[in-house]
Image 1 (tube, rainbow, N blue to C red):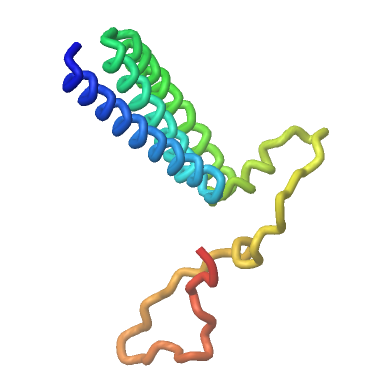
Image 2: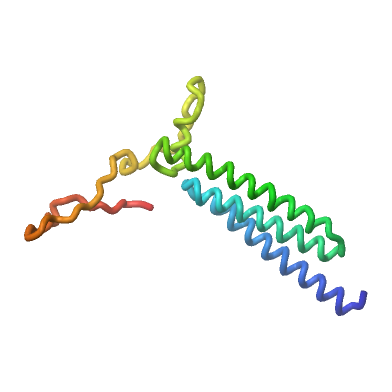
Length: 153
């Protein structure tokens, strides 16, 4: 291998590893900071893609197809995992009506103690009220009606 080809190959490897590490780090931050099940699921998929980019980069750098084949298997398993996780998310939403991770507490066994990292906001416990259109010719209520917006996201 000529020095120019070796330098180009090393530069491509470094760039791909940086991209893979950034994808993995973004996914890790998403899992650690968010409580929405769908966002956490997408963050886990982002971490898998970061690992796949790194595997393909190392495989290309060494000139074999082992990493490529492993990535195909990882993608296949990720597709199966996505189907199973979607079923869990839909069932949790059907039972609780929300996609917060704390909603999974209701799915625990009756003999296990409840573990809560911190109390849920009071606005999550209230039933949701939807705005309604006023009848023709009647002005809608003014500022005395409480706001329908949440204080937090």
